[in-house]
Image 1 (cartoon, protein in one colour):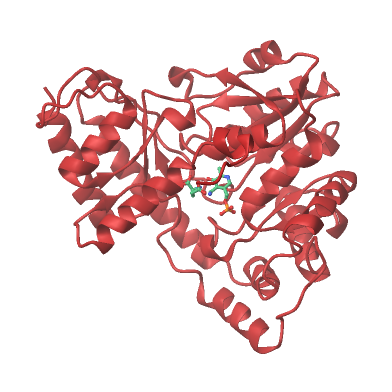
Image 2: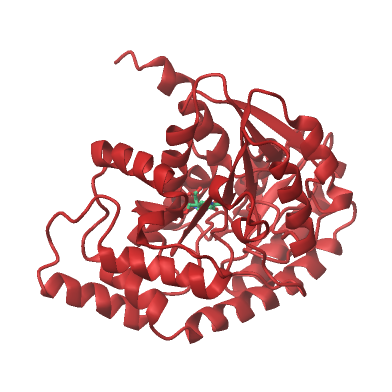
Length: 400
Ligand code: PMP
Ligand code: GLU
């Protein structure tokens, strides 16, 4: 067996992708699995976008393009940011990458030196810690309180900052907690950032369109003009346009940062798949009704799953106001036994037992920095949500 680098040996496997793959394999083997694993919309990519990709291929868009993206695609993203967030950005502020995931990784690589601190509120998405560490950063977790909807307060942020702090990473609407910050909460955090000129913000806004709170979405970079140049906004088409498999995401940032990221990308992946650029332009310039329909459906599912989840004794969780995740605290059940006599002593043990006994896949909270929780993605039909919840309710009641 090969001796892999220490880098790889220390790296955790993505637990979100691992659960999704396990559920898929069980389904393919004929098991009646209900999967709450995958963080991807269950809707098809809108037909006008598929058609734009198909036409691009037919038109011969099969060759290398400019590393940070075609001028048209970068312009489309810049226009979107001007129209939607009132930003004065141009194509030079945009780099298009292989999913938001790679845009994030490039951001860390472009900004972080060994030993620099990455301030990360928990619960966090599983890939942040691993990417930050791959870039040589030291992750400093900011613990938040479920009773404050897992939100970082300005006081908590201020207290966490040291001279070594380089990045503050925020994800709103959040994966895995499904919560979203109010505009005034983002503005208060931006004021803290303003007082610390060595700090950069990576604002992961991939769920920005999937927001159904009774207050508007606030983009971090437009919260405070004095820190705009220090904010890297991450976004993409995976969630809003149900395009996870297309692998198209991007960063919007100061031109110097975009140039640094582009230099990295030029040595890593070059450009993204060429026929995807016209699809991106179509997504942003074409009709938007499918996004609205999807958000409406997610909002409906969020209410339904929340009500049913809260009916389970001992469960505690914030009401989702964005994205498509619910993140219950299941620790009231720790220490009990399942019907096979196995002791449920962790979220991972509960997730495994739930899959074995009831064939329901959920992601355990450990790798999200929240070991009392499990994550359920409700990017699945109402019928499957109910089928899965019936099983979860039965399973929880069977623990003794
Ligand atoms: N950020 C968050 C918070 C996510 O949930 C995801 C979903 N995988 C991503 C980034 C990456 O998305 P993608 O690479 O599909 O654009
Ligand atoms: N963002 C999704 C999730 O958290 C997709 C899987 C991944 O890339 O982690 O489930």
